[in-house]
Image (tube, rainbow, N blue to C red):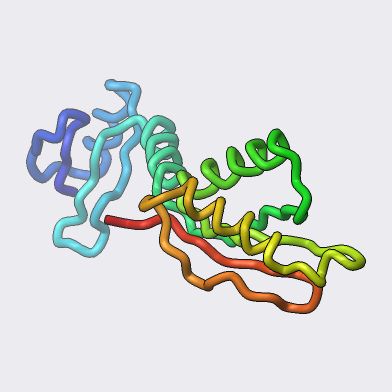
Length: 152
């Protein structure tokens, strides 16, 4: 096998038994890196550390975006509004899409302009950092819009 040491230096072509003996001396693992090449390439490494590092890198990779929903009411208090805006900021900073929904109850549905004001306020507060994917619209007793973080 062609042997590469832990530092990445090539040690040349050696018999498989000699490579295993070197791995035991160095208290490392002998890992076959390229089995299809001629001769096969093996590397001396601590496989536990390598597997941990690979798993950690995969966690760091960007994950798929999700649609997160934040629900408002037409007569929302300032503190509640600020709290929900904090959630929206967090979701957008994580790269998720956000569905801002206004839920109307009873006769509130007669005044959709109240819900529209809240959604306009959300967009004004977020400013140029977001893109509106679906403009505010009514569906039954719900008014909603979908916003995504702007990628520049």
